[in-house]
Image 1 (cartoon, rainbow, N blue to C red):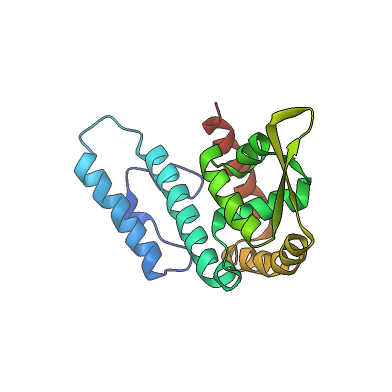
Image 2: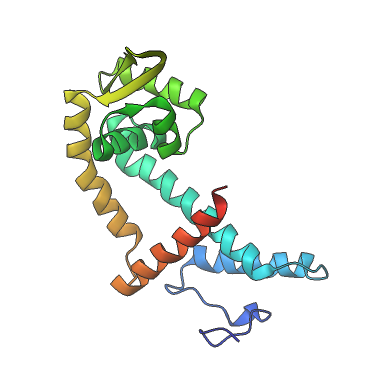
Length: 183
């Protein structure tokens, strides 16, 4: 039995906090997975935990792109680049790609788009011509400073229904999973 008073094998007792149709659909999917694969020696609790992280991340990202970023013609990756540069300042492309969770080739294409919009600028490092640094332009700075409060309001809406303690615990648990995923 876990801390919520149900046995992991007994998914019939699971309920979504808000009782939403989507939550019920997710629980039904978890029951279906267990029925379909239950004869195998699998860790279904880990499967469900990681599957729900993926589902949540995908849903939050898609909705953010639709409701917050689209009005600024930004993708999730474009927003992330602006945000990272805003918080940590100018940096070389290798570090920027790493901080944004992007492949270097993907970053290059996104930087080209952001550069065309005059939101970022690239500069070759004089001491090592193989390296390039990226910085926000004044237009990029204005955009991210205007956009981020609205993005944060979206984050508040997405975490509605969680207490402050639950938000902190969720963040702590996700840091553990993220650490496990980083080689």
